[in-house]
Length: 290
Image (cartoon, rainbow, N blue to C red; front, top):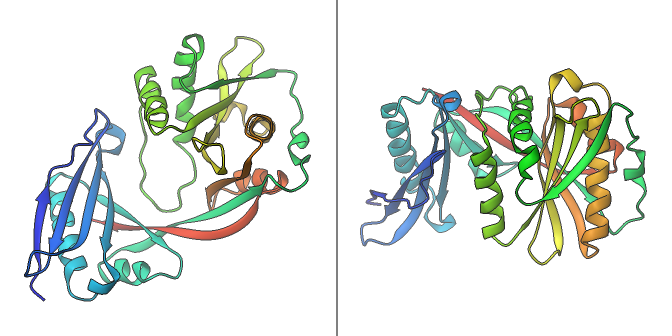
């Protein structure tokens, strides 16, 4: 089958990243697949690119996927990227496809779900801590906490990520506000719980939850992290327990909360287990070094 790959213009460029997109079409001009290459602009991730390839099931094994990958990898090299990461679902053709193109499995993500329709009470296991207090907000972080929250985001930098060369992300107040606006523009609800030190009110850790616009179905945990100086004190479990309690109270029709955690992030997986989350499935991140 004759395949033509065309580079498209993506309108979603931001100050923090840009995305390149390609369309594969057959000899008659019919679209058969797409590829996108996400290029972070952050200096700590200047080596990284994230690839997504999609080919219609009826058009697979005709060379479209390979042509799309070739175009994306050539561009990643030209952009000076050293690592390209791509997702794959467990047990799908995507795993074999990526392996055939020089990618290897670098990260396993364990997905888990808390059933909110079952009897509650697990969240009460999050005990209070005398040296800290919990604060919470909806949407954009309050001005008085914004600088501290931006600084606390570095707690994500050493999060276990298997063998993926994920790099680091630089956060400032404007970036926090940009993320909150993006969630709001989708009509979803962003809820954050943070632990602050009793001594100076600085944020020591945080957990984020995004709930669908109609409050139905499952909410999604975005991130939970504790700064290294405050770890080992149960803050993650305490914050997440409060997030669960608030979700039950504020969104009574919500049926569950879902999360994904790196296989090698044993502390966070233990927190989820203790709070009643149960495994559902695994996904993978494949990586190719250029």
